[in-house]
Image (cartoon, rainbow, N blue to C red):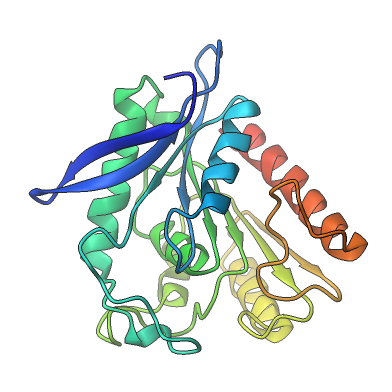
Length: 238
């Protein structure tokens, strides 16, 4: 598959959509799982996957809502019926799709945006196969998932097993600059390889590069800088 497209992946006895794009003519490319926000595999996430493939990185984005899970209400992530066990199965399904496409198991990472960012933070502590992770605007990492029945992503900080890059906006409220500082402090104290970058004057989700940043120079700079750092991180550790 030279161009991006959807595949059906069997997970827990059901079928899950997965948007996959393999780089053209790449020898032994790395691969990443890409997790989107509350819109799931949106056009924006398809574009991110396509951009990664253009940079020589295979990418697969699983549909985390394929079971019909309730999406979180605004400002209340604990209202979601996304449960950790199901998230693990779905992401492992995407990992399997990458491996079946020829990606070496030691060259797989994960990238997440907003809701997908908090899930990425969580899964870096639960899936030891990941070799690198990048998180954009991870919402509510201090609140539990699965209607409040599952751990909060921040609870697994001590178990994070790969280099972690985090991007936040200075005008964001989830995560706020204080939240970003709290994550940075904990990761530093625990000796985790990581970087936290906060862009002043930039709000929630405005650090996602798609090539069309609405003409706002500040947002465009933040998105382009974050994207460049993201690619550098993935190429360095994968």
